[in-house]
Image (tube, rainbow, N blue to C red; front, top):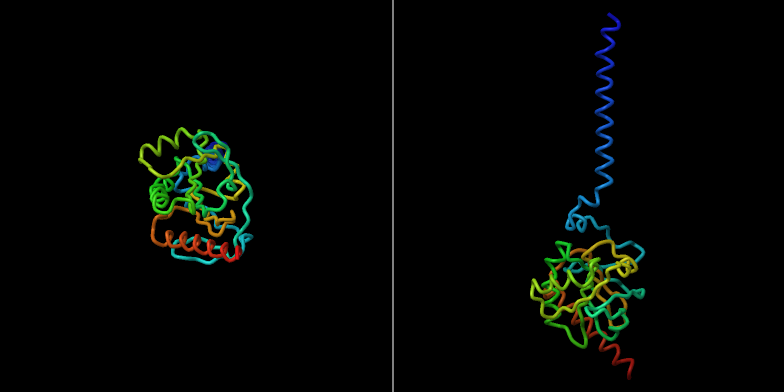
Length: 220
């Protein structure tokens, strides 16, 4: 009787142990493959805020983090469609909206037409949109995407290595920086936005006019 009753108990223990082991294996595999299971949009939604080390910020209707004082930016390297190496310093003297994006990022793809329209409206000697792709394949996928959406004003800029975005402490895409004429960051936005909306147009125009005035005062 003791031996007969021991077998069902031992079997139940073995079954329970097997179930626990299987569950632990599934949890391990799930955690290991978690980054691959996330869609680009889900990744963007879980981006952490800008670190407190950047200083105090104020909020505006665009949900941009506007800094109390302009922040110096480190030098980054990227390339244009022809493969010419560039830095942000090459665009000094203009207000720049730097948008870091990728063709595989769903929110990026949705906001890109608004960047093209913003460039069409304000682009010129005083303002430029730099849409900087971090696609690892470089120019090819970006060019296909531009042709698909028939962009007319945005130029192609690429950073396949992603070194530039890491240097700028960008945790995910899309992330957008508003940069003044001296190459300093004055605002940052993580996540998509309607960049051709009146709030953004007004902010860019105010930045251009304010800095033009300050340069004129220095000249006198």
